[in-house]
Amino acid sequence: MIDLHIHILPGLDDGPPNMAESLDMARHAAAGGIKAVVATPHVAPGLYNNNRVSILQALQHFRAQLQAHEIPMAVHSGAEYLLDPDLPRLIKEQQILTLGDGGRYLLVEFPTAEIPVFAEQVLFEIALLGVTPVLAHPERNAELLRSPGKLLPFVERGVLCQGTAASFTGKLGTRVQQLAHHYLRHGCYQFISSDAHGAVNRKPELQAACTVIQAYDPNAAGLLTADNPQRLLQGQAPTRLPSWPDQEQPNKSLWHSLWGKITGRK
Image (cartoon, rainbow, N blue to C red; front, top):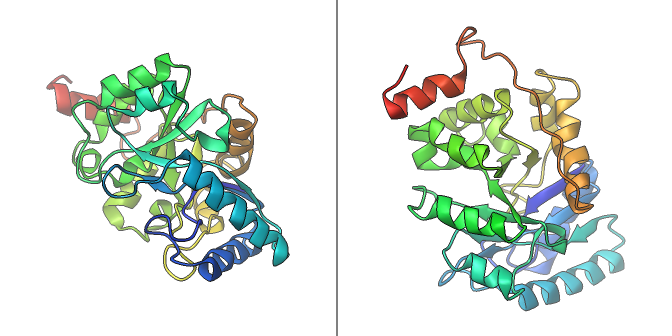
């Protein structure tokens, strides 16, 4: 498996504070079947002022430590960007770290409590620059938890989605779990990642989520945690999952229902 979203570089954000814990995270991930990760420290102006240079320097040092400790883990470069109107400019100036530094896919997140009013415009501008946004953990956003159908315009415009593994197992609460499964049933996710932040809490684990997801389709878990992440790192478009019937609404599309709640249509 390949973990596309993990906070494993020490001292850069709210992930591991030191190299020892970073190495413990890598050991835990490798023991759980994760062969490669994309290190994605937060970039959030005023909170986590990481940049391309500082992240690549930290990554180089971490790779050397992995080799010195004989931990079988490939680590690719990346970052998780808080959605900001300045991102298109940073892309033009080549100051951005895309996933795998391949120039094609950018991991972004909404603020926890809301969808920014500028979200559609900024994501559109990013796409015009030839970069596909990958939206991290939409199922955990408070506004989407209240109004799940608000994800629809982004999906229709080509934004890809990455779910958090723990969302599917209930570790992040029942409401998050329910929304994650709704989005999964309707083909919204292309990737499942750990979004791990430590070796004790929020550990790098994917297997439990895979077991849950396989109940929908035996091939779905492998697609979301191995095949599609590999395609992304190779600069290829991910394969989209099919939509599965929603057992709660067998004769009605979830999107139709949710979109009707927002627009007043039925």
